[in-house]
Image (cartoon, rainbow, N blue to C red):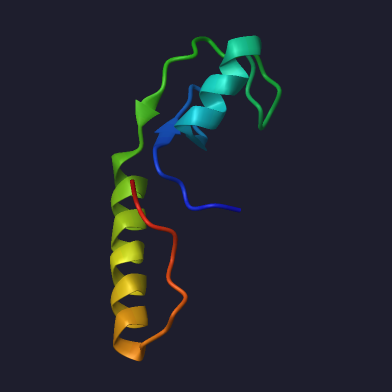
Length: 77
């Protein structure tokens, strides 16, 4: 499992990594979660989740720095 870099919401209401769902939609018009046919394949940025991920990474990096840990979460783009 990886930390999402560009979370988006599809018509099924689920959040996906943009690159992954775009690959899915290149060959499918269904939800990868439910299998239901989607009314459209437009994607909406999930700003709330992206902000939570950013906050998590900031806190984890700060804690790792304070503790002197060599292992830190994956770097952001």
